[in-house]
Length: 275
Image 1: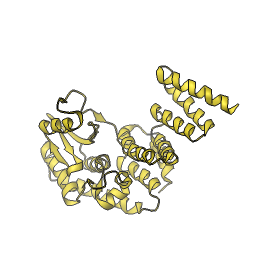
Image 2: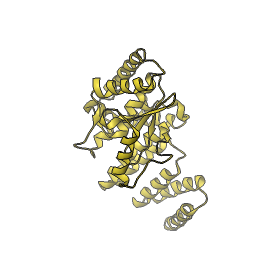
Image 3: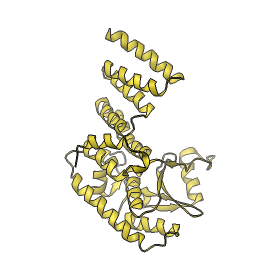
Image 4: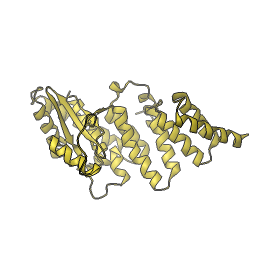
């Protein structure tokens, strides 16, 4: 397999519909854990795909409930995937290779496996950026089934979703339009890596956070807020020339507005330091 960063660069040129989400997450995992057995993880992804294809042959393609239950039985049951409640903030929970080894992970990391498997079965599925809790949705005739992959892929009712929302937003929080809006594969991958970036920042590791953010840009080269974040991280590390290049890229994407004015002001100060 090619160098993982070369693979991410290639993914960055693809339209979202052509991204293999499992393979992309594997490339990020190879960078973050170069000593890990990525080949075994790749074989496991193939095993999941084969199992999904066999499962699909046993289920009526119009039976959305059966698809959701079958997928949960495969990943949460047969393969034993579930959320890590004990060491939730462990970086291993956001690394696909480690998640495959441990059968434990964060909601979004598990979601990558659910999406990979559903797509291998030929079923539509997408991530849902639900407040504070990543979910997977499977659309079908007459509606969709929403799965809590952190708890074995349990299908959630409207009552369940409302209760989950209230845990985050308080007793007055209610379901509203847009909460179950589909996420693109690229956004799911960025959310996965943002867990690593955030934890590195919390651990006072700006160098590690910068590396993570730069790798995220490989698959999302037009993501303006990432360019802004990378610029600020370079500034913090006194890499002023690199920070200026990133601010310039951000301003090319977002030329107007308050964020653009602030970026121009910082960039002006940095140029003064370089002269």
